[in-house]
Image 1 (cartoon, rainbow, N blue to C red):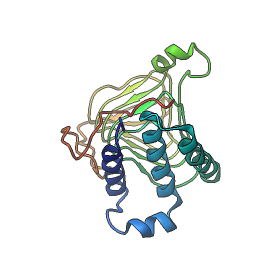
Image 2 (image 1 turned 135 degrees about the vertical axis):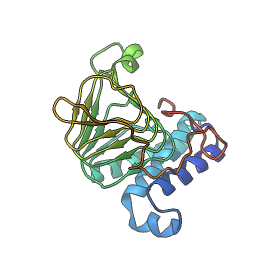
Image 3 (image 1 turned 120 degrees about the vertical axis):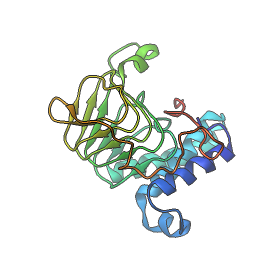
Image 4 (image 1 turned 90 degrees about the vertical axis):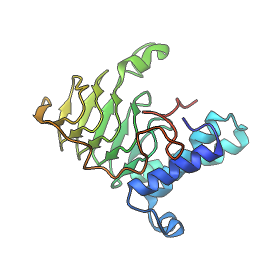
Length: 211
């Protein structure tokens, strides 16, 4: 959860490393719209979670939503832990009550859906996916409902996940998804946020809920 300016900077540092852009911060800000989106998302999480005045939040929210439309993203603040790598711009739709852990690498065409718009809002979080640390989500993958994905898993391109796979190190593929390999260690992600809970990578799997 981003609950301080220091924590926000740590999340952004982890995000930058996970995307392979540890250096050249100004360059990636100017020439990489996906990085600008991630930066605005983290800033908005910070402003919401620390209850900053609406006068500060609204301009960032406007810029964030405008850039979301441009990139084809429907992603609310507060979904991802540190170390997020959105690889390309293009269609990306995620239910706002989904929670994803550290070091997620996610490709275009992914749709992660829950029941946020069809159930009592107080229970919406019970109907959306929970995804662990160091998970790779391939192009076109779909995840629906209250599924649980364990740490260090790979969800293959165009896989459709409709049930839980809580064990660590699985590779999933197919429609519906099934286990096609075991024993992975999250090799397909760059780990900008260590999973040992040290001060360099604050937050657990999934950030705070947006307001």
